[in-house]
Image (tube, rainbow, N blue to C red; front, side, top):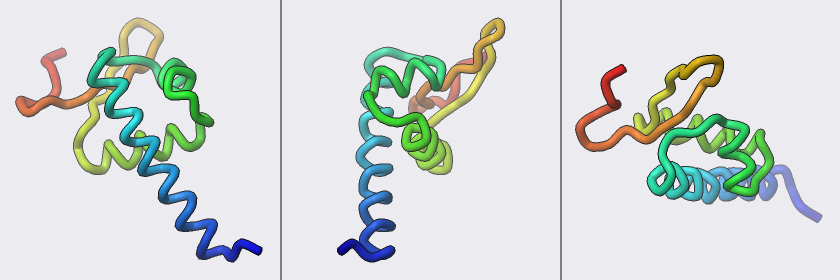
Length: 83
């Protein structure tokens, strides 16, 4: 039987792995919506959102609006692009 500590560790592992997939996808494809990101990464939206939070906390992402859409992109070594 799994303990709550095991569940916590499994969840953190999943979020960490997913953040790597998110980073790789954004690096290859550029900015996208969270809905498209979750679909393309092939993970549940709540896990993708947690992975996005992880990367945002590490200052690896920028967020912006384009029309009615909110997009997420990677910050490169020069910072986020100019609006």
